[in-house]
Amino acid sequence: MTHDDEIHALRQELAELRSEVAELRHTSRPATGPAPVATAPGPAPVATAPAVSVDVPNDRRAFLRGGALAAGVLAAGTATSVVAAMPAAAADNDTLLIGNLNQGASQTTLVVDNGVPGVIPFGFGVTDTDLSGFPSAALAGRGTGDSVHNGVLGVSSVSEGAGLLGIGQTADAWGVLGTSPGIGVQGESTDGIGVRGFSNSFVGVRALSNGAGPGLHASAGASGIGVRAEGGRAALYLVGSPETPNSSPHVHTAGEIAAQTDGDDVTFWGCVQTGVPGTWRELAGPTSAGSFHLLPTQQRIYDSRAGNAPATGPKTPLTGAGSPRIIDASGFVPLGSTAVMVNLTVVNTSGGGFVALHSSDAPWPGTSSVNWTAAGTVIANGTVVKLSTSLRFAATCAAGASTDLIIDVIGYYG
Image (cartoon, one colour):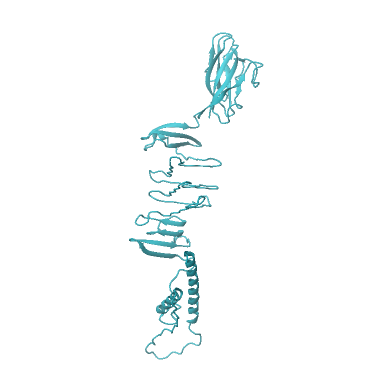
């Protein structure tokens, strides 16, 4: 007989026993009739149990029936007391507590509860001690280390299966919550994903450490990936603090990344040497230019000489008498670029003078990008200039001077 067959047979036996108990309740009720007439006091009559005839064939089902009936009669003593002395059992929605000393000196306890507030805050719990102080959960598992080390263990041998699957359907609910002085949740996989979290609107995986240890520790083999993150809006979101990491009083380890917040602005830092506070380098922030991106080939974005490409912008010499000339780089660098590296060439110069490239969001700061001392000079210089949010910058010529200018973009920051 298979395990499933045995379970099926036991269910049938349980149903039959329930039917017999119900019949016993019915047949043992006292007959109704007029109230008995009081008589003079005397010795109390000795109650005798009704004779119960039970056939006991030599099989397990009959043995279970006979055992149940005999237990009911022995517990009763009188026919009328059988109903009142039925064996105690948990009714629907009541708490069921089962315990047995079956693991050394510790007691393994199974608790099933209907989740009544103030009683037990979980639906199903297993522990080798008790579950007091547990957070609210549909499934609770606790191991103290005396005989059980893991709270909940889930194993799947299916490539698309999950050893442990938890789903939280509200913004303040967790699909899986693990609490431990060691590891809250540990997931291992030989060829798949150790821990995977998915959320439609809130948090797929949340890791919290109240001590000095990491909230999340992910590791992989030589050809694996420690952490893989995907997101339609963002793959990773770092929540920072106002503290600057290079003034932190804590021990920091090389490889850490920190986010420093200032209102709505965030600056990212990387620790390159372990220590207190360690050695940090600013990676990116509102005041940093970002990474430099070299264009595959230089791109000419402006030439003031008539008949020379590109055709954009005024085709006249730049003079000191006019306003700064606005140069548009939007067709050559991506949106979000903060600055460009350019090569600036002046030709057809008048007497001595200079040209300064600067941000179009501010007036000329009093600097120069290239200088000449004689008419007809041809000279070039490389420089970096800040871009406006619309990817523009300005060119200003010295007062009383004039020149044609050529600007080539080498790369951009962003």
